[in-house]
Length: 67
Ligand code: SF4
Image (tube, rainbow, N blue to C red; front, top):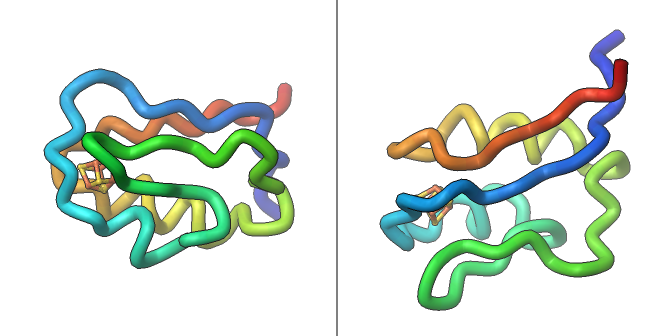
């Protein structure tokens, strides 16, 4: 079983491609750059969050796991 997600952050460098929102719109919103929605339930969508992080072309989605 994969680890629980503690936190998801967007590091500087997002190129606003829209992929993360397309993959997981319940967690990511792309405006000028991508944002994590304030009350997003990252745990409920953890598989899609990890997929979005994998697919981000500039690898700026940082997924922090619980210990
Ligand atoms: S996938 Fe990456 S580059 Fe594309 S909008 Fe999301 S954070 Fe930005």
